[in-house]
Amino acid sequence: MARRSWNDPNLKEFTMAISHSLFQHAVDALRRVLPCDKPADAALSAFFRDNHKLGQQDRHFIAESVFAVLRRHALLTALTAPQSTPKRLLIASLVRVRGHNLRELSDALTEADRKWAGELKALEPELSLAQRAELPDWVVEALQAGGMDDDTLLTLGRAMQHPAPLDLRVNTLKTRREDALAALQAAGISAEATPLSPFGLRVKGKPALTKMPLFTSGQIEVQDEGSQLLGLLLAPRRGEMVVDFCAGAGGKTLLLGAMMASTGRLYAFDISEKRLANLKPRLARSGLSNVHPQLLASENDSRIKRLAGKIDRVLVDAPCSGLGTLRRNPDLKLRQSPDSVAQLNATQASILNAAASLVKPGGRLVYATCSLLPAENDAIVDAFLASHPEFSLLNAEALLAEQRVQLATGERLRLNPARDNTDGFFAVALTRA
Image 1 (cartoon, rainbow, N blue to C red):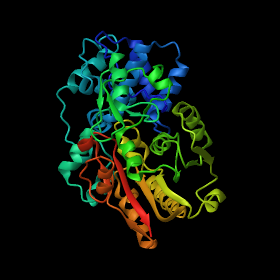
Image 2: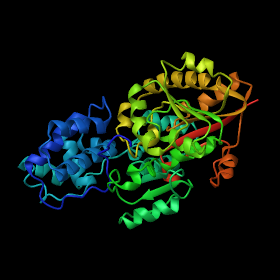
Image 3: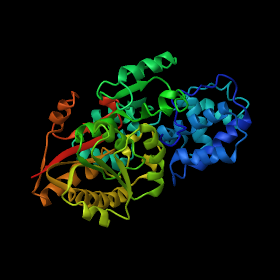
Image 4: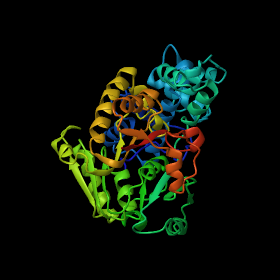
């Protein structure tokens, strides 16, 4: 299962007075997270390890408070300028975003803080388009340069200010979607079939799933519906040789293996030993026997050269800025920059070139990112096609229709959190002559 996230939209809200001690812990946690030199959930987990006596309800309050600041960082910075300290950002978030009244905060704040908090309610700072969308200026400029109009951009930004739903993928080797849905409902968990993926379930709230027999037996996995569509775009068949080139912890690998009915040979490549180690328990639960994890030194590893021209289908879920996942990881907008994206672009182009060498004539190559930036998406694909005339573009909408997914996406798959209620994804399918 994915690394535990404290970013939970359904954590129980406090209706009681917030103590000074709890408030100060939240300030300290926010101070730990805000340098944004590591993922916010990792920084929070470290904070809670250091403060292990905190109760579960207190942890929930602290975590939700921190993520509320990250989601509305631009608004809160404007409200607190020129003194946007962690303490003031937290107060502004509690009052303006999370809806706490001054009575609930009376024990937590000094008299001066209470006076300032009271003044916050009437403040209406003038915000730019980027601030209203809660996106960095450079991201807004990139999206505008790619043809996104201001209304669409603002709708997208506002959608990404809300937490993502919890999506599951049913392991079709072990159960049917309707049976998994019935099991969840019998356990008192509200869920429904996802509208796009034929393997998906969307759960209401954030119930504890990891101890349920449905999970421990490998019948379900946590996976965003958009991520599931990438596997459907690749559409591996029984008996084929398939490569998941950037497998990570293996969510898509497990989907591909199930679609292949555990036949053929499925390589899970990654350069991170830790990520591949996280695949092992998931693979054991899945019941798959056709998956072969392979640790690579780089995209130019000798293992790749030995498989050149032999693979039926290759999935490249390329390392990217992750800006399509801001509903889950709002800190990314503070951690990424034009320079970091430029570095990623070089890596993306190199990985795509290496992965393409694996594809045999008539085979399929899918390039995907969880980013909305043209520089990571269309620009990489267009440059690749210009230098690889043996590859041509397939129609993503038609390929998905073959998999019973009706989505008006055109040649290139573009998933938008505001429209599709998935993470933001981009993907193309290419074939080799």
